[in-house]
Length: 278
Image (tube, rainbow, N blue to C red; front, top):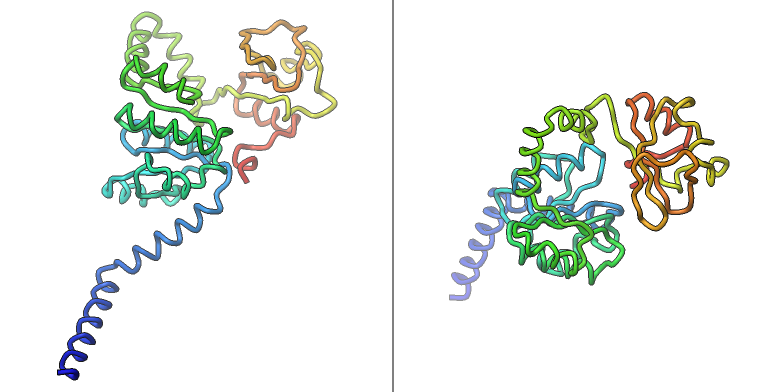
């Protein structure tokens, strides 16, 4: 009886191990473990919760700007699609679970964007993220306009309502089509000839700090136009006065071609987003 039972256990063990290897389960577990180890080392990444239509577009635009993106999705089919993109980090799990957010290394993240279809789930992610890491930028999707204010109170810096945004865009195409087309030409998608760039005070060389916009003379020296200014108090000024001076925590918003923006980066010795993240 002992011999027969031992042989049965041995045969079962061999069958189980063989099945584990042959079905690809071993390879799947190995890849998942490797991915989790890489996620632990991430810094300055963007966590995107949900990979629906809004999440996919968000990820696409982030990758264009060379951002490190970690997608958290509970649906297995969506995860299989994510795996096709080698530039993405991914985790299969519920983003409303605090443990999963911790595994996503949220304390080292640059931002978290929650695009879940349910406002209540988005609310839970915002509350949890705010509690775990106060410094992380939190952006949330909202389906119901009444929940937008609640999400901001919960800790979201920005709340986006895709349906409202899409409706306003379509209405604008009727009322001011040329203006909308011009704004789309000034694209943040990375493919347009004209780009809008922000210049933070920290990116400006020491010898150029505390100068006025007139003294910078960016139009004549670089060919770019300074079309906006953000004060250190967070106030936005459109078409700022030439006497406006740079100050700590302020930002300039400049408009120019790719060549002009590239020259601006060289003059101001600005680093690209990829270099900043590294």
